[in-house]
Image (cartoon, rainbow, N blue to C red):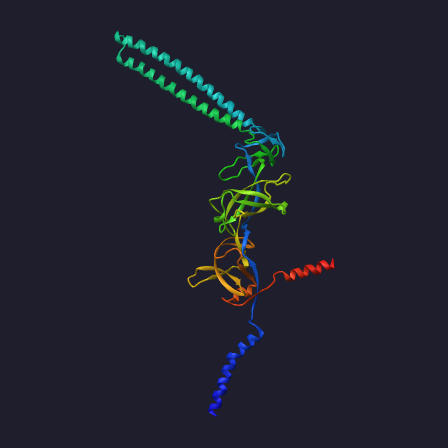
Length: 402
């Protein structure tokens, strides 16, 4: 009885071992269906998305430096102006009166100087006469000292009058400068793009505590730039000279080529974090009417547009080891088997990821399905699925229907 049980147990064990082998030999080894692409050189164009506004490269806001009413406006919005051209006049009456007052003060100083010079000349003559009389003992020493003191006082008074003249001339120059500021002239050649002030309104200058009124804005409309905000996580990858495509809100389907010309060193703090301003000089196509202040987005290209060995981004598997080192690998299809290959990657865009080492052109790289990439093991049997077969079938049905 015991011998019979032993043979029964041995038969069960043998069946457990042999039966799967027999089934596999009858049915064939199970294979995982995978999709494969051949590693080859691809054009990789990674970009950073930024948003901002379009502005004229040279744009000047004119403000007044004196308080006065607008008396006359000599231009209108859209006019072309030259540097130094008179644009606007403020009421000069107050400042003209100040100039006349200071001119009168200067004339008084000149008269005072002339009087003091005559007084000094007289004091000099009296002192000379007193010196001769002192030698002849016709006057005493005390009288001679009084004459010398009078001469010295005349010199001091003349110096005081000369200083008063210099002060009057300085105040007069300031008054004339204030009067000249009532004539507003163009600091640059360009176009009047904004003219918010009107005749009769009061122009107020800017101070530390108050922003003055803008009289008008002049811009050189021949050169346009885009001022973009780049997140602090991406700013380290921005370089001078990088190319970009800028899409204004009014022309969302037209990409305007641009080049990075300036990168801010200090960030601007916003509600959602910190950002750095990046300025792009635009090459605007003829006929595209971009205007200052338009909102826009930009795709800033990080690469040079060259070709390099690459694989689809979905083919790269990222793992973090126990040492917290991030490693990347791909699965290759070799003679129906899966082979794990460690790689090093470079730039990537939405479709391709450059491979700097670990692969060669012509290697058959498994790209999916995603579940298969997660469950594959070294040496697993794989069967290549014809990628796009369903799309071709659908296209054939649509062509037949047409």
